[in-house]
Image (cartoon, rainbow, N blue to C red; front, side):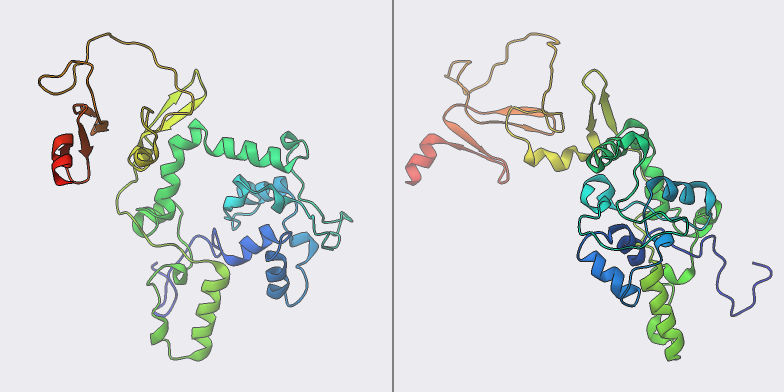
Length: 298
């Protein structure tokens, strides 16, 4: 920073971005409408065969060790859509300099040539324990406190300044050429998302049921609770095995009724709430309606 001139842009680690429209189109160009978008992006023809996404292993080596400026991230289709890995439309992408014809995407050996197997195992890796324990660190880089400032510099996580939200006031740029250049850079080279948090995101709070190969994500329980059927455990796998911890008599009901007389039941804030058989719970209104009151109103 001591050598920067007044009009020089701020320094950065990467001149490219981890996600932009061009990357997405390159990954998905074997499918419509992305193939048409790829043609539009390249002036009516596909990109050079050597630059087309064609090999999972080669892309991994480029991003992990061979090219320090290759910081591309995987798009969601890697975890649910095997179709984008096959050239089922038989597009002619040409041949690379070594004579290899660009057709279907070359998969890792463990995929055994099956795109569906590749996506399935990729999804399992995403949901694995090791990723669950580290995922919040990625969130800190993209959406959290390591996105900008000193923490971003320490984490080697800074990009061209125009990619950040609010870094450039487009309306104040008077030079038409410069304004168009900035807009084109943002559109073609990526844009950093809004910063959501100024402190570290917490790690996923999950329980691993190693015996059954299932995980319970406790952070998601409040969102899953309304979707869970009665008498089911919120957030638990489809098959849940319970062990009896203790035995006791549970007495519910109203005065004058037998212990077995029970009406509406629900779980609220971890506590079981039950009312008599002539009553019904109205949780949103925080009321208990009895049968004789309902009968009087009608």
